Image 1 (cartoon, rainbow, N blue to C red):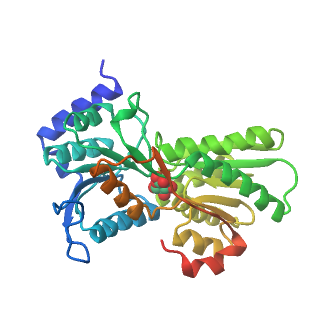
Image 2 (cartoon, helix red, strand yellow):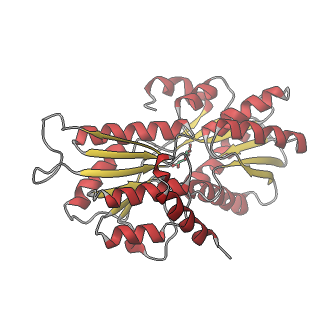
Image 3 (tube, helix red, strand yellow):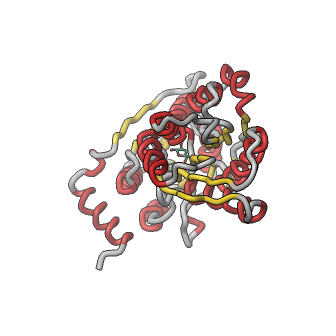
Length: 339
Ligand code: GZL
């Protein structure tokens, strides 16, 4: 019987023969840095193969822009592939980068499992792999050099801690019924944000907080709207929504309003990311707090890529710095938001 990993390999094997790469959107941008240099030690222009999850959210678009502009600034040749949230497209893109003999491969894995086979192929060809944004589950730590990205478990903890402040500010007393809109099933941010939030719940709110319903909205606005509408059918007395990203929260706001309720008042909302539209919703009083997850990883990624290419030692996890915002900070912060 085909298990998930065999199935994926088989699918990729067949699809690669049939040109699966055509399913992913690929583009290549090559440029010289501002000083006309060739981007890297020794004059040869560094070539980076980058496989992106997709374009599912405002966060992802800002992340893509950051990677592309930083590669241009560094003078690297960037081979960029958009996997449209399909793991098989990412695996196919990584195989394509290996075949093209790029200097370094970087990618944001759409889910945590199923990468060992293709990463072993990169290792066999001595092409270093850098993870950005999301991590992978692997039994062989040598399959990637480092992760440039956020601590999603801590983001989950921070979401629970800021919800305490939101509840206090709203004067909420007594039990708290929570709906959770999860990110993409199997994705590191979805797994870890839920884990961090639950850690705080179990430690400090065993008796008063309860997650009454939880389901994936796949990090998209459409998903958030659709699932929240279903939540309101089955649980009309929800007090709080914890959405794993702003986009699902913004979709949920549409469903909450369609149900004749006031988002930010009848249902308190905490989200993660901090994209501009999230801050707009917060300034309109519809989101109560946002835990920032910084997508502007491009500059850090290019620094690491150069060090890896030059054989320098890099930290195993290069964490991004980020803050948290309550509703009354939204208006002042909005003009300075960079994504
Ligand atoms: C988090 C990133 C997540 C964002 C979502 O680093 O992987 O994926 O929180 C995005 O908006 O879709």
